[in-house]
Image 1 (tube, rainbow, N blue to C red):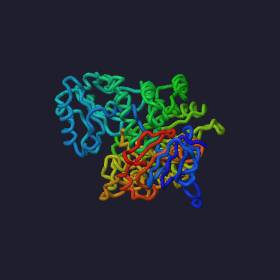
Image 2 (image 1 turned 90 degrees about the vertical axis):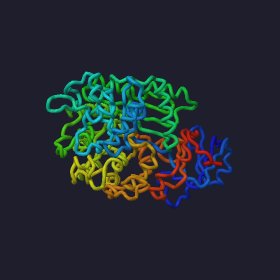
Image 3 (image 1 turned 180 degrees about the horizontal axis):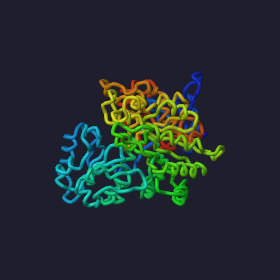
Image 4 (image 1 turned 60 degrees about the vertical axis):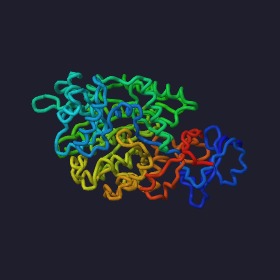
Length: 543
């Protein structure tokens, strides 16, 4: 063996389920982009390697993978003023006023990350932003990514003057007189305004995407399950890969959307994209939706929320969703379905449990699962589906006292069924974790911490939200490593530090399995490797 690289670290968490009696390795040999050998530091002295990187007392794990993220879509959703830190409507208005002042005359004013809790008991309305943007066109994206608030001038430019009908459960919210309030629910309604906004150039988008990927690598990520593939996405990945020596700085597993209003002809076109890709990116699945979000009343619940909303499926004819599932599953194409409400999760379970036995092997997933009763947890364990959840959706946007918009809409019983990570793991479910960036921050270390704390890391004064659903440190790390690989059907090639698997690693300055979660959130990813090649290396972290 003549490895290309040897990596040394005092602690290596292989995540391969090795028995406690086996000594943990401290040396990893890489050859041809895969793990060639594991051993002790003394073993490594007998491996003639082209390069040795010694991280001393640091901790090496399989590379962290975010199981739900939107890089290219996020470029559009994060244009303009970041409103995610605003605590009330006055702050939002002040930030938008400053953004308008800094925006060239004639350009659109943009904002994103708006938390609906800032409206309190008031309804979101264009009149709340018209004056601070001085009558200019403005579109503010709410944090859930499924809704937006448009100014009066924006609606005028888009010629949105009243309600519209869509193939999916979208809505131009109107007042009793039929005039749009400015609130746009779900993608089709938001797109009415978004499509008339000036677009960034390809070069601008590519530059922003390159910087975003650099930030991903610095945060500790070596891979991501990309849950969208909008217009120009594949061209951006290709162009960026061509510019970078050795490929993208992380692996991308991409799932284009399959939406209501489509049929088999459209589904065939989507299926034909499977396998398209480059060195480190590939179209590998299909993303579907059965509902929207609790916060804007578009989730699918068995019983209405407190406002009488969240009772309609995203596919107006749910049987067509089930037909789409049969089409893709029957061809061995993995799917991931957005399902937040209890009725939505049940509909996905129904669709997959109705499939004929013995079909092609593929891993199918449900994304988000924000409120799920006991009987669905039991069904989930029998259905063979993987779960993909985002701990910071819970910790950032709901509160232990249930005074937040999400909890208030659902009521106590359903809010107490919030993000049942621990119960899903106890039922034997594969549970991948992620951020859903730009809906929440992408940095994985705070997410690993929040999964254990059930509150925001670094805020010891906050009460945990349904604390019985906290994950252990091991379970949280598995959500970004071994379970992330299983949720992608890639356990044979990734997810653990095992000979023959991909040489994708993350190196920490603390031990994620023993450090206090609040300290983990403040820790640093010292390095990332993909295919055994350095993608990020903190200054002074190795010798």
